[in-house]
Structures are given as structure tokens and as C-alpha cells.
Amino acid sequence: MGSPPGLAGRWRRLFAGVLDWLIVNVVSVPFNFSSWEYVWDRGRGAWDRYPVEHTFLAGLVAFLYFWLLHAFWNGQTLGKRLFGIRVVQEHGGRITVTQAAVRQAVAAAFAWLCCVGLLVDLAWILFDPRKQALHDKAARTVVVSA
Image 1: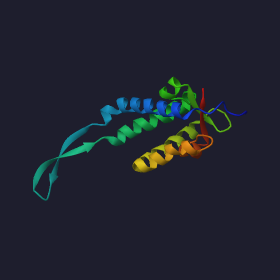
Image 2: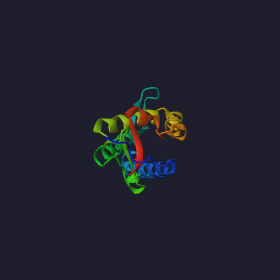
Image 3: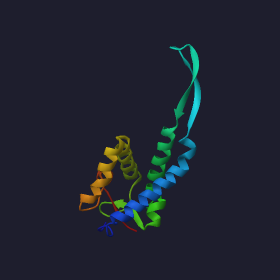
Image 4: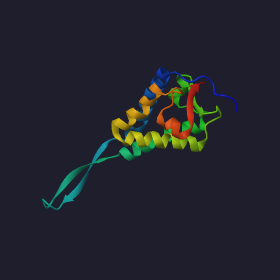
């Protein structure tokens, strides 16, 4: 295929990402609450309340949102569509399901490395001539104007 359309601006990527994370957080609210379960505390010999976090399900919602929308909605999420950008292969072709999964898995791995990993991944676009984050490099994708 030919070369991809013009690379998307860093600010549009930032604002699209912020909007997408707001959407993910709203959708995952039911999975992100703390509930209490009673567990037996052997040391005290009594029942005690223990908080149970549902962050795994919230993370799954986020992974599926980014992976499935990128893979099956022309390389776009809701935020990317609103800001007129999309993810494509480095040579300009449509992103594959596998590339979308790799891209999101690498982004999730950096997010799980706490703030440092996430900041390194996202800050990479500031210095990269093709404006690729590390998760883009791993999946061989770029973000372009739609």
C-alpha cells in the first residue's frame, strides 16, 4: 500500500486519549467499586470485614474498549473519531485485530508498571519523529489524521 496520511498531532492524540479514558472510567464504574466481604481472621478468632476491589474487571473493560474499537471500527475509538484521527499500520493499511491486541497489551503492560511505565510510553511521542508511542512501535502502527 501507499504511505499513510499525515501523522496526527500530539495535542489531538492527547485530547482523544483523555476523552477515551473518561468514557472507559464511566463504563467501568460498576466494576470499580469496593465491596466488603466477611472473612475469618484466625489471629483474632473473629469475623472481619475485608474490602474487595474489582479493578481486574475495570481493566478488562478498558482493554476490550481499546482493542475492539481499534480492530473493528476503522482504527478509531470514540475519542479518536471525535478528534479526527485513527490508528493504521506503518505503511498506511488498516490495523489488524492482532496489531490492535498487541498495541493494547503493550499499553496495558506499561500502565501496570505504574505511572513511570505509562509516562515513558506516552512521553515517547514527544521525541519520536513519527510520533509513535512505545505501544505503537511494538504493534508497528502510527496514528494519523482520519
